[in-house]
Image (cartoon, rainbow, N blue to C red; front, side):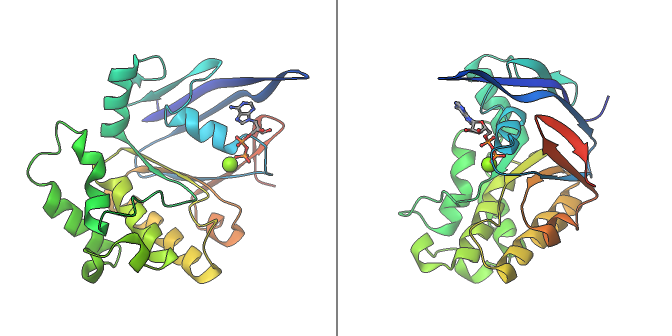
Length: 225
Ligand code: ADP
Ligand code: MG
């Protein structure tokens, strides 16, 4: 069994015209150190898949496992803890809190983490250095550029040392140059930490840097043509 396994994930949404099967038995297995880009047209279910992989949403049927633990069916309190300790998220928008500094934003996930402990400030500093923001730690989001804000979001996604990092169009709001920088950063940190990175992207150039690329089409994963 791979470190991360999604097995036969089905997602059906109810709509006025009846149920729609957005994901139709999609399966994927990835080991630590592997990265995957998910491509596909808007509305094909890419975010829906990432939300299920990240336990932000539940599947209609099918299972998600990380290190052998099937977490999709955990109770909400246990699930929140599992997510906090094992999964990092980067979204299209940075979702930083405007009243907090860069380092405070990076530290937010540690508030809910019983294992974060005393070393978290040093870890947040180290992460901000790794993303090239050593001299911006006390800046609020409004004092940072779009690319810098997203770099803070990348640092925040790694603060609890996750196994699985999920990025949903992380470069979608950035210009080409910053998009490339963020993409390269996500991949270099993924290799350094030997995490599993799954990234949804429309950016062909970025997707080409990933070890594996898969397209979501009519609710199914197909190998990129
Ligand atoms: P993508 O990320 O590939 O653009 P999404 O996963 O966001 O696509 O959405 C896939 C489809 O599922 C879309 O048609 C969307 O309208 C529908 N959808 C997403 N979330 C819901 C929901 N909570 N209820 C009903 N339909 C939804
Ligand atoms: Mg989406």
